[in-house]
Length: 443
Image 1 (cartoon, rainbow, N blue to C red):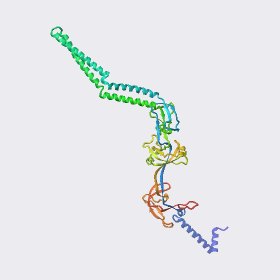
Image 2 (cartoon, helix red, strand yellow):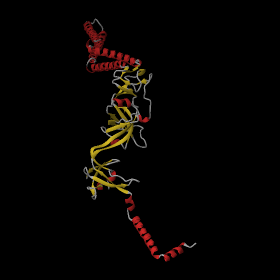
Image 3 (spheres, rainbow, N blue to C red):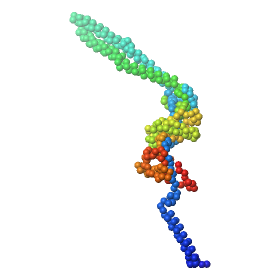
Image 4 (cartoon, helix red, strand yellow):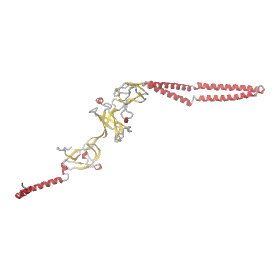
């Protein structure tokens, strides 16, 4: 078998003209291929297609999503009126209750004993106040007056005896010792009269000024306490103040973990302790958690939309009602503080009210920015950044694009708000990767 090189040499010698034409064709093809491969951007231009969009005014909305749960919006707390034991419960958490409906009854044994003590204190205060009101004719003043009268009579009697004894002494009929004894007795009785006068004056002062004011205050306090305890006893039967759904009271420390806040028969309650919360009809809300990176972006009054797996197809609307000013105790997650926020829902349609229940999970979207008539372009059309941002605008179908500087506003995943530089009807263009196996149609 002949060597390939020798065969090629024999062929060139036998047909030199034809062989030269083949070699020239191969050489030209190689040069063209190298030029195509070596040209900058040639491969990229084959994989790019021009896209365009017409600028128009349309609503532009930005939102932030959160997860939460349906909770009472407008609600009234039902609390224990006094310290006592739950004697009877007439509801189950989640029940629909009407205004005036009996919810529970508390034992009055403890409050009755306190009421008896309060009545005794009141009666004493009434007696003290009456004594001071009639103080001048009262027993204390009568005693003081009797003491002064007795001391005065004894003094007068001693003075008469001294006068008689002096006459007898001058005539030498009685010894001087008897007269001196009467003198000492007279001095003592004068001191007794002075003491009785002072006692009468001090006793009279006790029924005036500060003492009478103190007695009046004691009487008022005793009357208020007795009235309060009487009202507590009358409120031993707890009724619903308004119609709605009664639910569990909120935990006193939400960040400390889930605790059973329900009330049962036989449980001891303290005055003011929540028995439950009545969510007024048509006043539901959504309670959710914010971390510290979001809390300043959420403010009362912002619009919200709510959806959930428990009410599929329904989109509820409302507004942010409140954002906690203090982080939840023990609620830090991943080193970030957690804040509780509440959104109040608009009144629900009847079919929505039948679906939505307190405690259901909810997906909340807070509208943080809204422009009902914004000029927007696709994000791909914006080139450059900051003050150097621009777009390419083509005025005629086959005209050359011109560069237009724009001022960019808010940015969403699918569109960018343009504050200046463009007008409705402008056509912006940009290049994008061509779809595989298909040609892209301009917008």
